[in-house]
Length: 358
Image 1 (cartoon, helix red, strand yellow):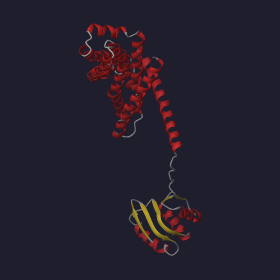
Image 2: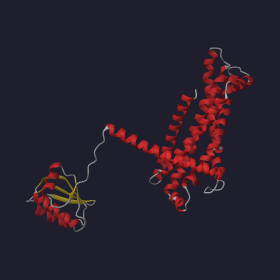
Image 3: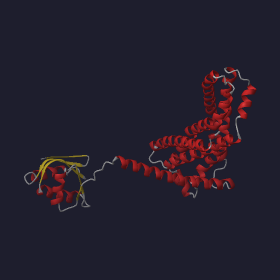
Image 4: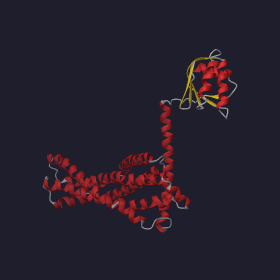
């Protein structure tokens, strides 16, 4: 029988019975002069009888003040012997049960339902304070709306311009090859106007805003949560939602349709270059057909999409920021979750709009 103490764990190996208990007791007493373990590892115990259990009870009385000594690694036979002969409260760590496939699915669905419920609660609070904030600026930083309009709107124009121009250029280039084969060159204007206004421009703008502004919102709120600034606002009787989230919510509501309109114009310029140079359309023809093909419903749908996308991005970003746990690692996870969830939600909203507003 041998024993050793490593990291506050007493490891017993061999047979612990009436013959080995006396010498084991002497060896353990010498080890206990230097440190007191809080756990006994029995994974290498081969034989255990009532004398060995009495020895474990004695260790429990000496080492613990609460009458509990944690045992680990005991096989079922050893555990049964301990439960039969022990006069004290010897406990074994609970073993985690592996979840089945359907249990994992159910657990994921429950978690998703809880997150959705919490997001709806946050959304209702944001809408409430946003409505109040239109008429009263109390509880908000002075000039925060203008600052957020600049951060979320004007500073996003360079990258949005570049990507919109490239997308319009590529879409027109690919479509022009097929239209030229059928002699339908003039329909490139219809295709560009309809696709960019109804689908592509709002979606591109939302994805860029989600990756750029949504991540910034999540990281800012997550950092405030980690550094306890959110708690400080609550102590000062200020609503964190009204003070931090509402200015961003109101600002993105205003700037998002403007960004979409700007994206449409830039992408039309990119598409017009191909239509004029490759398909020999005149500038007047391209512009006239682009305007004539659009209806008021198309424009309203486009701007309506952009506002819904904007609200979704801000609310998801704020929710991920408020839910952060831990330090810098938690902030990074919250930022990543915000971008992924926002883009996913935007695509779902776009699919819903496509189904109901054909």
